[in-house]
Image (tube, rainbow, N blue to C red; front, side):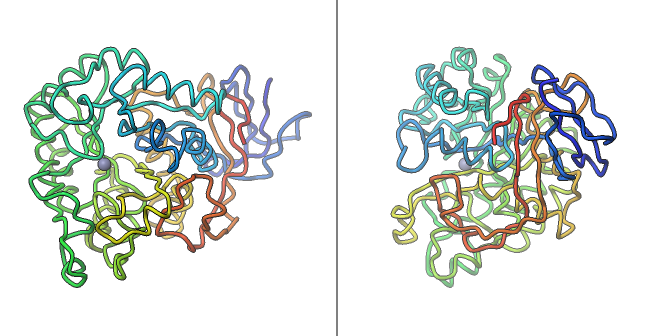
Length: 416
Ligand SMILES: [Zn+2]
């Protein structure tokens, strides 16, 4: 055996985990401490997470984040893999950029966490010409997305869905109707009226959610919907799934905890696209992750420097840094009774990995030894200093966080 983890708490049972050649050999009820074993001292063991929506900012914006710092934040946050969006500079619409990203990741973390590049759906994210999906897929892209904006033309999106499906990959669609003027910093509603700023109506999202559902149903090709933020979109997804639609959807922790009242005082740290909406939307999203209408969680990790965020509300960039906080916030949902502890495995591991055809541990013999120990009793305050990401831009700064990763193995190799 290469690794024996003794006295770990797996789904309420005290077990010893035996690992050889990067895969789980067997799991036994906890007995005597085997020699050379790692003593988990009764800490919880979770299967490693996959984040299907990360912005790593490299190449091009390494003042915001690098691939190495994103992976560092990921592994400390319980992730063995992150799927990185294509809106880098240059855009990831060529195999050279894909290869560059993969090399950088391998240099920083040869044993994982893994970087899974997402190729641009169209060249330059411009929505005009399809990217060379076949070549990008071959180079290592696991999905395609123009995240940051929608593919505006429905006909183009249809072609891209068909082509992506042909090369064994899915489109991840950022749902936002661009005919509602973009660059609207917060949700349209009471708060935007009070602050006197132009708001983004929630229907700008749900109109495109409806479009994606219609295309998917018509073509019988699946599509994945990014960062769902509104109760109206949840309703559309629920109705579609009842009819057997092939769509899947994600939402992010910030939409489950915050609403647009946090933007009072022109708080640019809460400026994110899609915007934080109302308490009604937040509750609908909480119900949707519990019921499975929303399939999975994702961070939409969008690091920026503080000097960029310290601009006026309409100039500050959109985005929240999310890799450092995702796990603790999810644990808070368990503590609040919004979800069960077992839902963590479904929302962060099984659904994301299986949707994008990536391996994960089932804790059965022969499955990859990708897991981490979690101590729910550690409480800590979120400060810029104790974040691993270069992006300190989060409205959760100052919050008391619950639980921490104390050790993490990927393919049986201890990475922290
Ligand atoms: Zn997006």
